[in-house]
Length: 418
Image (cartoon, rainbow, N blue to C red; front, side, top):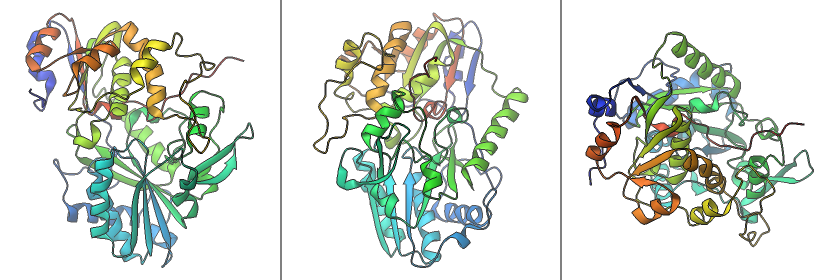
């Protein structure tokens, strides 16, 4: 099976489309100016980290915020481009700052094999005490109490973050998050307990509890991806300053007419990047991004290298939920042994996929089992030739590169009218 695409898929089937074909690249913001193309090596990334940490946006040189002997926690989005190299560069910088302990806490969606890979990389780059773990949102011993939300319900956060002297979030640059209500530090709701995540997504709790402020998150590190999934930019600054720079870059791109992309009859969402990017939650983000750019009743294609089976509960959820916006619909799965809701980003994704699959034809490419795709209501494309034949029946088409970065990192129900 041909699972890779040429550098520009738009060019690959442009002749099959009678109308316009556009291609949209991920948003790139860079503190030190444009970076060279292609993968970035360890030394280049270390130099980039050092220069950005020395001059954060709207904050003094970050070395003044670190005290020798500190325990520093890195709260990490696993979709960061070239994450292994970025973490190695950060660990070298932290060791030079005489940090005693580093804890890397990965969002719960992180593949276990990737966590093992990162653990080896961090251990090789930091001589002090270093741990790398995937957030466990339903295990009480992995969580620490932080506060109560507006309804009085307890809010827990990954214990490694609660116990740390300093927290540095490491995030992907996602254009979809610019106008969203998601916490700009990337801590909430990704590293909260499962019950808090569910309340947030289902609009039971209408606001995030400002964990970044309570835990004194001074700066965030935001990494941009190019169209092939390589590191294309790195920015360090306060959460507000970094978000403003992202907003300015997006505004400039729109003002200059760069990548003007009217809704298309067919939108192909490509999951560019290595195996750790090829997950079903990123597939959902890519499909959501395609939905935002496709005509009503248009066709969506997910082009990926996903080989994993679909989440076990997706088929049941997609078939069971009559109204995906009904917050009173109860999950049939029991709570965890520690009493937390059995809930994840993938649970909510299943609810949101149902109306998309009802309104659009959705096809997928990858190594996932065809019978599972069929049970979800998706078709399968085995190669570029089949995509070309599909494209020939459409008037216009668009391509989203690194499509998971064009949508929001987390979705929630729309606010209800009072």
